[in-house]
Amino acid sequence: MKDRTALRERFLRDSIPIRLGGLAANLSRVQSFAGHEANQQVVVGLLEESKFFIEWTAAETDLETAAELVDLQVQLACWQKAWHRIWNDRARRQQVAIESGRWSQRVLELSGLLG
Image (cartoon, rainbow, N blue to C red; front, side, top):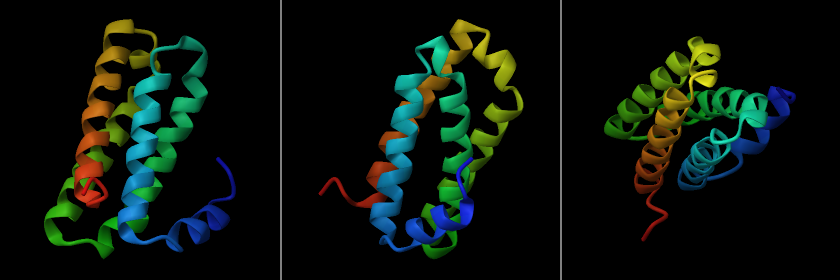
């Protein structure tokens, strides 16, 4: 992963809605990239980065949003733990893609950026 200090400093300059929008974008990328076998390392990086985005944001949100973000962080960690099995099973990888898309939409809703 890139230098986390620089990433963190840059990420924390943004408002909470923009941070959540960035997290939603990462999850959308997971959804998209999971469909292609050659993107395994890209997806692994997105999962890791997304966990950090949650860590750096959840404490600054309201309790309900923080709880949902922690649930998402746990889900990301579970995927990471089983990643080699998931990646090698097309059906499981597709399920992760679908769930990532759902989470992306939910985080975008939480961000308030939709209107």
